[in-house]
Length: 247
Image (cartoon, helix red, strand yellow):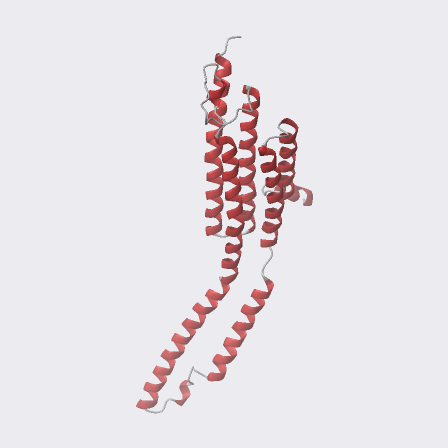
C-alpha cells in the first residue's frame, strides 16, 4: 500500500528534480549540435532559472510560521482586551428604562466591535496568502522574460531561406543554419525550452493553492504554448518543403 501510494503521488505531481534534469539534458543536446549558437547560453540560463525556481516553489509549500504565531498572538491579545474593557454589559443589571436603553446601545456597540474584530482577523489570516502570492509573481516575471528571449532566438529562423530562389537583402540576418535538418532541430529545441518553462511555472500552482496564482501560471503556460505553436508552424513548413523536393 505504501509503495502504491508513492507511485500514485509520483504520477500525479510534478517532480522539480526531473524538470531540472530535463533542462540540463536539453542544454547538453544543444551544446553538442550548436556549440557556437547563442541558444546554448539561453539553455544554460534556463537550467539555472529552473533550479532557482524549483527551490523557491518548494519553499512556498512551508507555512510562514512567524506570521501564524503573530496572528495567534494578535487574536489572544484582542480577546483579552475585549474581556478587559467589558464591552458586553451583563443583562442582570438592567433595572430601568435608561438602563435598558444604555444596555441596548452597549450590546449594539459590542456586536459592531465583534464584527470589526472578525473582519480584521480574517484580513490578518489572508496576509500569508498575499505574501506568497507576491513572491510567486516576482519569480514568474523572470520566467516570462526568459520566454521572450527564447522567442527572439527563433524569430529570424525563416523556412523561406532554405529555398533556392531566396535572395537575402543587405539587412537580412546572417544565415548560420543552411540545411533543413539543422533549422528544424534548432526550432525544435526552442519549442522544448518553451515547454520546460511552462512546467517550471506549474510548480508554483502545485505549491500554492491560490486562484490568483493559478491564473498567473496559466498565463505563462498559454504564452509558452502560443509561441511554441508558431514554432511548429515553421517546422511543418520545413517538413512540407522536404516532402515536395525531388528525390
